[in-house]
Length: 416
Image 1 (spheres, helix red, strand yellow):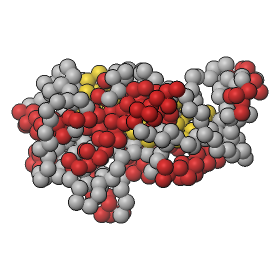
Image 2: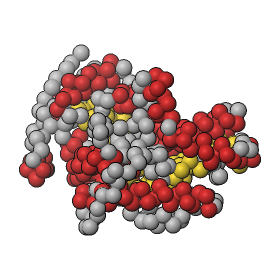
Image 3: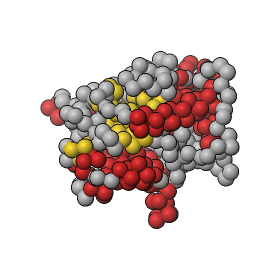
Image 4: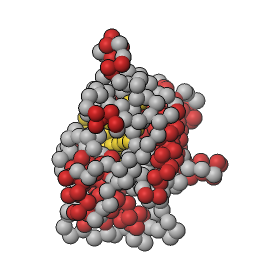
């Protein structure tokens, strides 16, 4: 098996970016496949790995390659971590973007994770996924995000001992400011961005505000795991299988202020409260069961919910590339600008959404919001506004002051 390490030549863009931000350009880039259309000798010499001949279209029968789709380029941060360890193989297998969709993986790590990234690339190589055209690794986001169609931003610093949510916002905010600028310069102009690293709503806001060249509505914060957990609880309580649960929306922040919406949820096509006739359970137990599920899992297993998080990222992508079933929705944190529910503009807020399968979405406008639900939405909205003020210096907003110090921690247990 061919194996090679190389250093990319510094382009004018990379030199400019490194100079502007005191960054050290990435030293490690590895490819496991040739380009789809090999031509120049320079392209050939940069192609490594067991897939090279298989994907040299000049060596294939044209009838086999004529129908190949354009390769989708997917950048993944935190690529040597536990969540990515589950997600990358789902992506490479065709389980997420489709069984006929070629994919290139562009993996971002840190200086400390270079060898781990090599190991990830080797495992992907050995798995012989026929849709996996290329794997590249690096430590410079300006390079790794190059022409990316999707950016899955998993990497984030974990919470340290005694660290408050405000501290976590600051530390990870600085990371997402840099990565947002890198997306702005290097990624496809229509790149879809899904932020997983917590606090994901405000991290997505920071990345978005630092990437003005990419449409604001292309940025998502992952609340799909919360939706999946809510569906699980409804299924367990009702005695129905989870596939009968629909219109299960998560409103607001990925924190314990999140609002799992039982009012608009359906079980077998019927309103959830008509099936589960227990309003005390809905109002006092349902939301804590969803929000505290990660902590309960750690107590049982001693591990965080990396696998189910990876599944929820895959679900979030599929929600955008597969049309939403009629009358159903999916949950995702998106920019609140112009939303139909009166949530203030300028926040990354989880709403019920639908998609036609083209990667875009619209916020559903037919959800009932009663007084109880509105009060809950207002509370999570207020928290997101406070988080925004804590990171005002990272998004070019004047006059923000952080009021989250010394207050109750609302981080979802087990997640940073």
